[in-house]
Length: 106
Image (cartoon, rainbow, N blue to C red; front, side, top):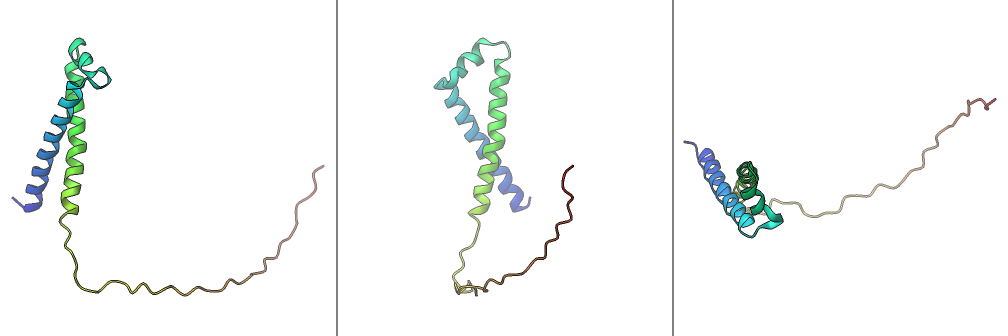
């Protein structure tokens, strides 16, 4: 399996694990009365499942983005810019002829 695919799967699993912890903490601390909603409504389990799934998608995407950004290599060479200021061109006024062809209102 390619390294990038393995990295994506691993980071997705970590993201879904974090989403599971996050959803469990939301339900445990009864934020916005979610525990009551999940336990006292007939389709409350669906709300918990959707909360977990959608948070898992978001958390795994963020986790993968962080992992990719951490893969950047530090450059030690001095190939960057010299921070030399850009030359500023002087402003020039350009005359624009204007014709008034509008007819007055009747």
